[in-house]
Image (cartoon, rainbow, N blue to C red):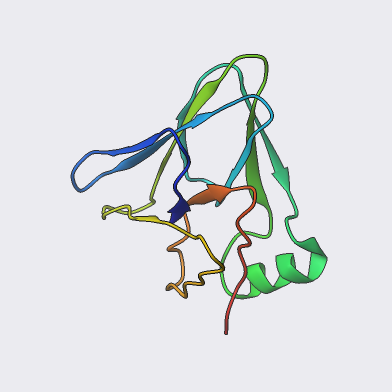
Amino acid sequence: MYAVPIKSSITGDNLQFANIAIAPGETKYAETGTMAYMTVNVSMDAKLRGGLFRGLRRKRTGESFFLTHFGAEGDPGVVAFAGRVPGEIMALALRGGKQFILQKDSFLCAEDQVDFDIAF
């Protein structure tokens, strides 16, 4: 799942990639290990998103304790994300306070404004 940025595309058949353009000053974040490739001006940094309690909840349910944050430095950049197993990537528009509950390991990437949390 990822929030649809202005410039993105999903390519491939059963091994799909979410190709996302990142403008300078924008931040995207993703589950650890989902980045397939990125341009040289994209920086990545592992961060504890949502504080210690949310990190521990993610870890307890089998997700990553840290999430990887991506940003472009200087010029716009491109980063691609792929799932760990074959399957279809679906873009979900998260406008107006919509919420989705998905199964474990469904999260791929999102814009910085999207609140990612674990539900029991």
